[in-house]
Image (cartoon, rainbow, N blue to C red; front, side, top):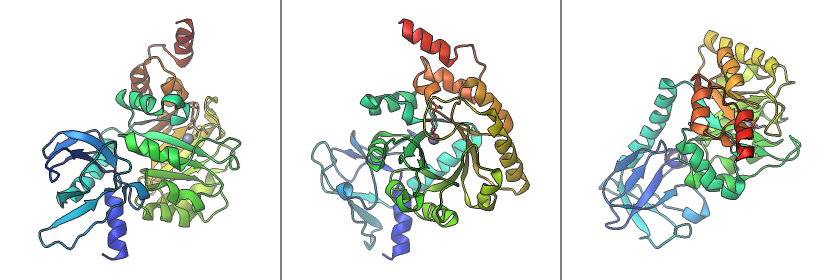
Amino acid sequence: MNDSTSAHRAGLFRHIKIAFVETPVAQCTLRLGDGEHLRMGGSVLQCLNLIPGTGDNSRLINNDRPDGHFFLRLGLSSLAQSFPHEVIVTRKIQHFSQAYRVLTEARTRNNPIIVNPSVLACNFAKLEEDCTRIEKAGADWLHLDIMDGHFVDNISFGPPIVETISRFATRPLDTHLMISRPDHYYKRFTPFVHNVTMHVETEVDIAGTLRGIRGEGCTAGLAISPPTPFEKVLPFLDQIDLLLVMTVHPGFGGQTFMPETMEKVHRARQLREERNLKFHIEVDGGINQATAQTAREAGANVFVAGTSIFHAIDPAKTMAELRGAETTGDDIDTQRRERQTK
Ligand code: DX5
Ligand code: ZN
C-alpha cells in the first residue's frame, strides 16, 4: 500500500467507531458519529475509536486479499475485556465512513445553526458524564479549547484529554488551538478530532499549517482575536473550512461578549457570498441566548458556548434558544440564582 493510499485510509477511518460483538467476530455494528447505528448483527459489547497510527489500538490493514475483505488488527490494551485479535469486515466500512462525512455535511446544510458547547466549562471531575449529558441534550459539536500558557495567559488541557474525549464523544470535535506553535502541535490533535482551528496571530506559516491540518484528514479553521484587524485573515479565506471570530479575548471562559466584533462577522459573511466560499462563521466567548441572536443576525452559524450551556439548568432549552427558539427569560443569571437557592 503506498503512502497516499494509507493516508487516505487513515482519514476515512478517523471517525468511525467499531463496536465489537461477542460472536461471531465477522459480524459487527458500525456506530456512525451522529449516533446512528447500522446493524450488521450481534450485540454491542464495546465501542472503540479507531485512531490511526497510535499505539494502543494499532492495526494493520491488509488490502491484498482477493476476496475483497481487509483486516483490522486491533490491540487489546484499551479494551475492557478480551476480544478476538482480528475482526474481518468488508469494504463496506469504507462506504459507511464516507457516509458519515456526508451525513455531517447534510446535517449542516439542513440545519445551518450549529451549537457547539465548550468543554472548558464542564465539570472535569465528571468529564465523560458531563459531556454525554450535553450531547444528549442536543449538542451538534463539542468545542475543545487548547491553551498553552504562552499564546494566552492560561493553560487548559492537551492531547491526552482530547484523546480521552474522542473515545466517548459521539459528536464532531472542534479543536481551538490557542497556542503559539500550531504548526508544531496540530498533528498531536488531528488523529482524534474533526476540525482544528489555529490563530491568525501566531507567527507560523499559516497557509502551510492549514494545508497540513487538511492533509491529516481534518477540516481547518482560522481564528481571529478581537484586537486583530480583519485584513489579516483575507489571504486565507479560500483555504479554510471555518472562520472563528473571537467575541472575547481568548484565554478564559465566562467573559462578556464584545459586540464590536460583529463587524468582522458581517464582513466575513459578505466576502463569503461575494467570493462564493463555503466556510462556517463561528463565534466564541460570552455567547448566551441574547448575544447568539446578535451574532446570528450578523451572519454567524456556529455558536460556541461554555458557561451558558454547561451551567444551564435546562441545557436542551438553552441550546434551542441559541438556535433561535424564543427565549422565555430563563437566562443564565436566573438559572444560576435558581441553582444557588436549591
Ligand atoms: C475562550 C474560549 C471559549 C470559552 C467560551 O478563550 O475560547 O471557548 O470556553 O466560554 P464562555 O461561553 O463561558 O464565554
Ligand atoms: Zn474556543
